[in-house]
Image 1 (tube, one colour):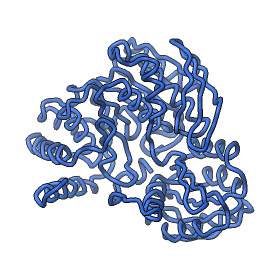
Image 2 (image 1 turned 90 degrees about the horizontal axis):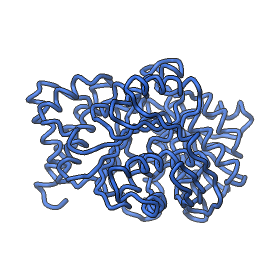
Image 3 (image 1 turned 135 degrees about the vertical axis):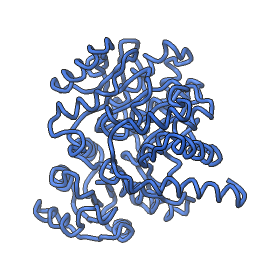
Length: 449
């Protein structure tokens, strides 16, 4: 982005999106459909894959996107939230959206919304930008991560070739329901006629709900846990090697995504790629292996080495994610280890802290997004109640500075993607690496962090 005019236009586009952040979370597809009609239906211009679930959506999307790129296809990838730079949400050819393309997409969105007489929510606007940008960039296929739920999510206006449903658990219950069946019904809403559905879930209650939806639309539902077998056969500081057997073939795959829980996400992405290969013929076993190996997905058990200290950065904001992190800690991180922890107050704080905190020698608690964050002092008291030494540092930078100076050689930072983003920004700066200005999605603090 060069020149005052381009910078001014970019800043104006960001300000427009920011102006929508007070719109709140308003599930429903009416606004989307009316604006899309005024924009000549860009959501149907590019074939798509839709990915819903509670945990593992982003890793699955990132792996599949990398496979498609390794197969030679121009791919659009829409995800949320971003960690440091807003443009991370829209990736084209593996790179954050070009500023000029972003400006054009926002301009088209504004004009379409005006013609439709509708004001989109913040997340709806971000989704509309994805549809417009991927169409205008000439993408061959788009990988779309559902923001929350599925049935009423803004992304669920496409006609996906493949619908993927990752592990479903209890999260966002104020919007999705209080039972696992209710939550599963919302996620199942991304299964449409003329698609192929694949899920990694094994809970019979969830599978019954997904199966009923699939049967209603005469859609094949593939159960990845039954169709595939995967195991870790090697590990290094930067990757793990997985042996994966699918109905099609056997693979030996190296991935930078760490933790045993990633096996099911990778299996889901590989099964999706195999299904897509019927239409996208350049997807072949060597491209699948190359794509898995080149996957980039920051802030998910990401390892950063700095000043003889190793940091592991993750979101880990619900019990399912915390359990996955705990499994990795038990198998791969030696004591003594330090936890830097901050979480949103509306999450299941007690469940997450009970899983994570007892695994650490010491805890530093912080507040990644006040006033929505749980109190650092209250989190420290929780740690004390588990018999863990703890101190509170409400300012994130203070907590990370303390961790950097701490005697423990290994630091795990988790509890919120706000905290993960702040930690990566902090470590980038301390490593003298250039970093983009960090922006914050205020509207979706509860829904996505």
